[in-house]
Image (tube, rainbow, N blue to C red; front, top):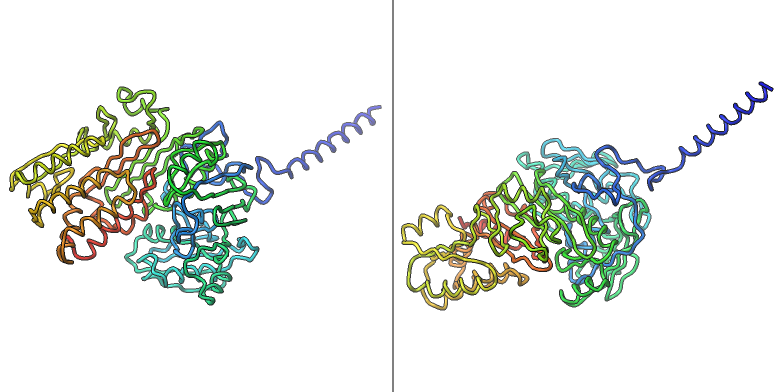
Length: 564
């Protein structure tokens, strides 16, 4: 009887051991057998744990089955083409193609994306190809694709740094990318994080056929990449993408229909026909579904790779809610004193900023981290809810020479922008004080008359420039500002001086957008911006999609033309 009992016990333990062994072979948490489980720095994301640090949760969430619908205003207008080279924050191509690497601000480092591994030795980058990666058509990725892509972007001069780049092939898997010894590593990381890696077997053939001109037919471009989505269908009105890997933390499908204008895109989101929307640049001020809520998170992950020119940039993302995005971005670079705050969404945490300034109906939000940063920077709200830097100023001070000719027009300017919610205080000063303030950049706005033209029409036009600068609710504001200011002057020499005038006026000005039902953005331009390389700023967008890169590039060109 004892033997039978021992035999049964042995059989039971054997069966239990077999079951345990089988159980150990079953993937858990949505991860396949060949997918590494997240390490301690990459916690598994759950709906109950909304992440606050973007880079701590990349690639760790379970896949979703919903279709994300992104309303856009254009599909083919050049910006969707990979031929322009730059890894754009707004383009759906971010979902199809990949850059060589991405900056990782939390770790003050970089991570390989397209490459298998990367190593810096001063200004020399050592690249190892990823022999496990394939293009969407099944063709294996090779080092030749990396070489082709880098040489193509060098040839097309998409970034000045590439002009100094030298490529040396070690073997079929290793490439050395060299730059001058004085090139900072973060500058190299920034450039490499902006360039699409292209399939040589497709684009080399296109080049031979002279088929790489801008086209209205996506089929001509044969959009095959290595990113999380592949192009599954397209026509004149929409683009359809399908997720490549089941384990990726993205919706299974993305549909990008084209709408004619901002109003129709917004209506599409408000009525639930679309989840989020693009304009010419990335826009995400409202969402309408769970799919949009979580896909927005993924898109913010992607977009955060674009404008990280130094390792000291930190991104934060707050919780998302149905039909309204609640997000905060805080950028601080150690290269200069440029600071950009963007936050928009619900009034969930408005009290963290200043409870007495807000009503329950006002759509304000900022994370605790962003709120602390704003307070630390001296950013305070006035009674109308606008934010002015400079330690609690409730109006922008416009300094101008105390001449009777200027006062009526500037008072008109003050009245017009004040009616639009931008408080401006006129500060007339004598000539000596004006010159002192101008030289010391001791102003918020400066009515600069160093290129004196006292004709009333010229003065009125310049006031109009300032109005266009402040009233940034119109798109392409900076472009129109540049064009309008250039018309004031008759030749190249005075145009240079005009740019210098406006650059001075901008150097210490605060550009403030009013808070409305959709979003709020704040952008402050410090003197330190002009002390660095403005070409480093690839994109600074507000929630309405206005791209301040135009301003930076314009001022950079002014500097390179000899404007002090």
